[in-house]
Picture (cartoon, rainbow, N blue to C red):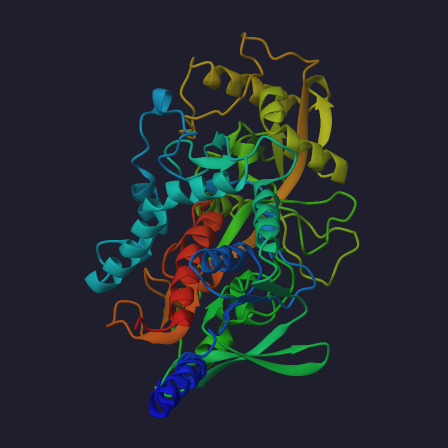
Length: 529
């Protein structure tokens, strides 16, 4: 072998491994550089920010996670989540669902019609077409997605197998469970448990008071929130879902501003200011702010009759057969809309001022009795047990009632038996059984409690669309969505008009909360490459 050939072989022996090493080094370096460049071009997704931890906020948070949001931050100014949603006691609407009795009532196709009728004058033919169209679109989303909302909750583990008919509904479609928890608490606790399963991506901040929506160019584009917690100021960047609820408890603020005539009425809502000003500051338009729902039946606690915040006597109690009495006589169809029943009650003589642990002078109340017979009591047993325990209902034997009330019960029993038409046009009697055999048993036990109209729900709020986007335009105008901002629940307006159907508040929280969460998650993800 020549010397030249030997050197060539030696050179190749060294060069080939060296080349491989250098290639691997540069390839690795390029790969790292490429990854760094990609990461620089695509920063981590911002969190979806949800403000308000009632049912709308919880639904939005869960929907955002399911839609792929890398993280969700849920902020609530209260010490505990749940808002007013956790108090809801009548149920959630859905139609048509697997739990409705289609064999008896047929397939439910009247939910949209009932909702439009309940909306009243704000949706009549005299209203401008663009406004009617926008309202009707929202109602269509609410009602058409109601069955899937029920399925969504049931699939999470919520029992909604019991269905009742509430006022303003043409047939039973309001769902609740058969267990001890009322529907609001059952739904809220289930969603909270599900969200906790995603603790690596979900964070709940309580006692966190959002003080402003952060905005940037282009005009009306929301980029995050400013909030206070533990005395310190914080900011958080990301798309925002606003679900802070209504202003029914803002007695001396928004309620007095928009409905001064309701001064002095008790309420079911905790006293706290409405957050609508934060939306207005970001460019949002408000609608129907004078549309406030008075619920006809809030319990007057005999131990503290002047307390301004009261427990709701669930509409379900009347749906299952309960009746209303004034001086021993019925005076209204108990299954009329809340607006109608409340109006009739408030047309009665007002109760005289009472002694008690009042929270200031001027509380306006009425003296109306809610009475449940044994059938209605059994059908609403879980609720009745709670109300009895709180002292809001009392058990009495029929023979212990005054003569006028006993005569009313006998007359009503004849109506339920079909022997005569009801003078108030009630046609659905729930589970009423007293006098079913023709005799009203004096030893039968009924439940009686005093009720009065109360401020319960505010139909007005931020103008929004079917994608749950908060708008910077008036209802019926060309839509101008505020970038990065969605809303759901009682903070929004335009769906309910003059009067909300019972069972539709929880429903709108789920339907539009899910839409808002999904849309915000897409926004956080950014445009597709």
